[in-house]
Amino acid sequence: MDRGDRRSTGVTATTLDVPATAALDIDALYRDARDDVYAYAATLLRDAGAAEDVTAQAFERAYRKRRRYDARRGSPRAWLFGIARNAALDELRRRKRAATTEIPAPPPAPGPDELAEQAAQRETVRQALARLGARDREVIALRYHAELSTAELAAVLGVSQTNAGTLVHRAMTKLRESLDA
Amino acid sequence: MPDLEALVRATRPAPDPAWAARLDSRAAAGFHKDPWWSVLRVDYLPALAVASVLTVLVVIAVAWPGGGTSNNSNAGSSGMTLGGGGSSSDSASSGSAASRAAAPKTAAGAPAPLESAGTDRSVQRDAQLTLTTPADNVGPVSDSALRVADSLDGYVQSSNVSTSGGSAYASIQLNVPSAQLDQALARLSRLAHVQARAQTAQDLTDQRSVLRASVADARAERDGLRRRLARAETEKERAVLRAKLQRAEQLIVTRQRRVASLDHEVAYATIDVTVKGTHRHPAATGGGGGWSPGGGLHTALRVLEISFGVLLVALAVCVPLGLLAGAAALSARLVVRRRRERALNMA
Image (cartoon, rainbow over all chains, first blue to last red; front, side, top):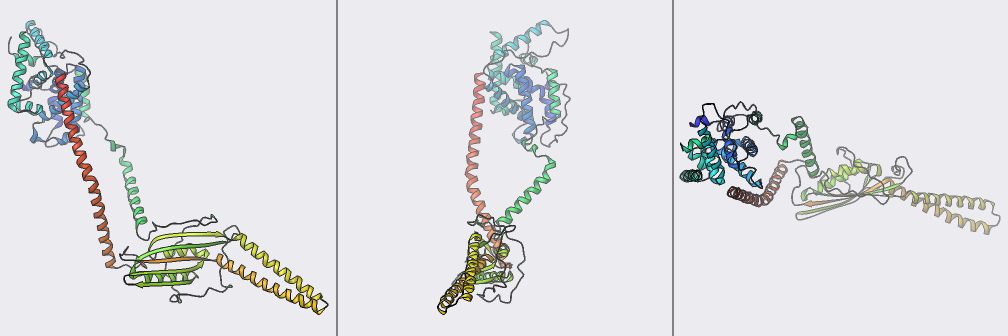
């Protein structure tokens, strides 16, 4: 699936009072990354309500700290997901236990022509993903749900790009093993 | 199984459209949250600015040398409240200003004994004033103090100015009409920096009444003796009565003098003025109100010196505190980061 197709859809909000800065167009970033941030948080936390809270909190912090953004330290998406990651981990710290063990479901079936076999495969993958450890789940969510590049993933996790690639490979291997089990 | 990556992408959770719409509206408002300083409404800012400026001006006026920050006012034993000094220019100049001691005015020219408004109280008032000024300015300040007494119909009871080497000192005792005491203190306080100021008041009403009654008694006795002398028949009796009459006359004079002395104490207030010479110039306008470029420069340097000192003290306090705060903030960030990673491992 093309990365451009994975961007947030149906976003109509525009900021009225916030002046756009040359370094960071926070409004465009919101339009671009709203659904990605939610997808990442939902996959990591396995809780739709908590994911909504974390997403809102992440954008709130991003709006508040937008003047501190430094382009030399990474792309706007990497910066935003760094904030979102902190918010998500804070949520994990606060939680006494996981609210659910199920990753929120994707949108309903797109049309009648979708094969039942594909739907079953998707559900199998979703359950296998939910069984993974939080670290692996996070890496997969950042790479395939939020569509971060390897460089952005490395910046968010604070590791080298090579290490980030390795982490993705390991997580996918574990997911494959979980599916085969 | 087909391409795993595509299948993983297909499991991407999507947000609830209703929640997304709510978040959009919050984003449209810029996730606006009023900062804590927003309680200071813009409407109030001019008033706050004016209030701040006035506060600074008051602080400067009070702290400025000669402004009377060191004044100590003490009520006397009578417990009467003594009012503040009036306002008057120090332009009066008496022809007898040069004299270091002048005779008190005659009884006829003396002001009436001070009696508090609305009552017949007789109050004796005194004040002590300590001024500081550069050593070379002690003489002019002392002369000005004498002129103040003259201009207010007062007189100089004693005056002593001593100068040795770089130090100077003056001790002056002034007597001014009690009604003019506040005005005199106000004008004296403007001559130089006021280091200390105190006032006392003593109610002599009862004492004065007793003395006046004793004078009346002595006169009555004298009149009685005169009548008895007129009726005396023998020479021996007249001699005895004359002797008694003489003693009565002396008693009247003595008691009248005591009454007059008391009236004078009430009518005139005593001001003990001490002028101390300092090695540093306390202010460009000190010492008789004169201003000189040198004095101004000295004051400017002094202000810079004090400002630099204050800055050094502030830095000495703030730098260690800032380092500690920075270290604490860094430690807190590290701790939070570790806790987040631990939470991820435990999830």
